Amino acid sequence: MEKVYNKLVRDRIPEIIVGNGGEPFTRILDDVEYKSELEKKLNEEYQEVLGATESSDRIEELADMVEIIDALAALEGKSLDDVIEVQKQKRLKRGGFKEKIFLEKVVE
Image (cartoon, rainbow, N blue to C red; front, side, top):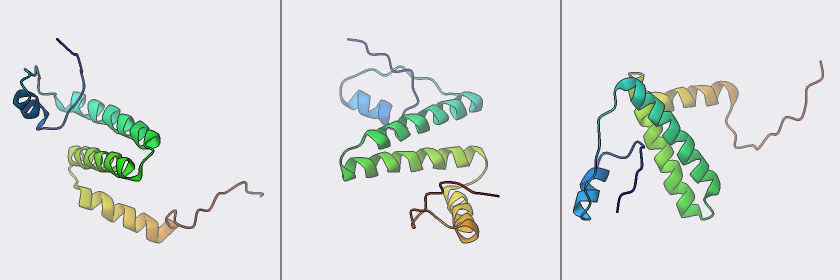
């Protein structure tokens, strides 16, 4: 039986497939393809976060998003720590989302 995936997978997936008796057919992406596939994967994981009904499933999907964000940051020559530092600076300057503020409108 053959199943076509045509998507970016985690580094150990081919090894796991072989361990399960399968034969993976893979190729290495260039940086342009890699960025595009990471962006697709980020959207895929986002949709899975929205569809998760259990807390543990949601945390798993959020962890997948963090992994992808880490890879996207690396393409920019940055690390996940760099992204988190920018996030902290933005939080200090503009706040976070903990207070659940919903802006309805502004009158000028």
